[in-house]
Length: 252
Image 1: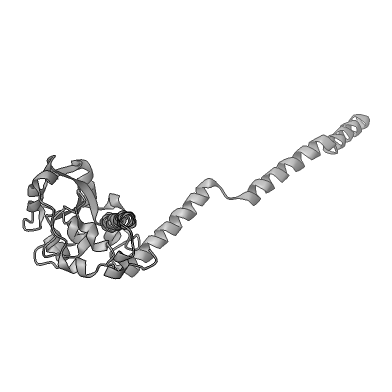
Image 2: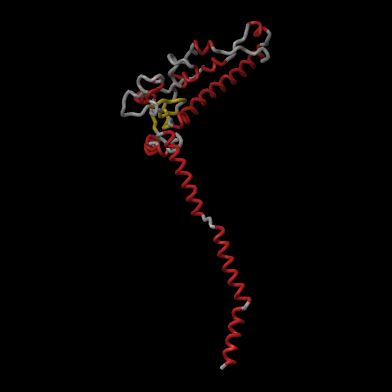
């Protein structure tokens, strides 16, 4: 009986001291320690990001009193943009565009530049009745945007307007050039002047595409019948624009 008990205790001790079992236990403990030490999951990162966004939005609203995006209003948060998106592109004639001058409160306020119609309803104090720029509403006044002659140039017709950028030379300078030289110089000046006209138009198109924090936006295009150029006489360039013509550089 004593020998059997001794043999059992010996086997138990050997099993306890089995290096393979000990190593397995230590590996389990090590794996648990590693998983505990890492401790950061994708869910934790998402929680931190959402927390930062929430705090930022609350701070923005506290500072601005009306915006959770620091006065930036994405298009998808603006009812006018959403309505225009589902309505689709607008196509109007110049005559139809006149109705969108702000006089009818049930209609948006539109203006056009170079055939593109923009919604400026977000600024009724500027483009609505009594506004300082109400004369632009309901019109494609591309020419006026270039010349600055708001009393005479409320039209889309920009033919001949490049003359305001044509440099002025003196008689002595003209006399020193041959006929061929004069022609070449004039052709060059006309090209440069037209580039300046295009640049002025693009500037204002960009303004209304991105102006006032993106609250102005394009909604459609103007429909014009073919052959209007043949039926419409070319306008004279307004005096204000001509007085601003640059002087020719003698080296050119």
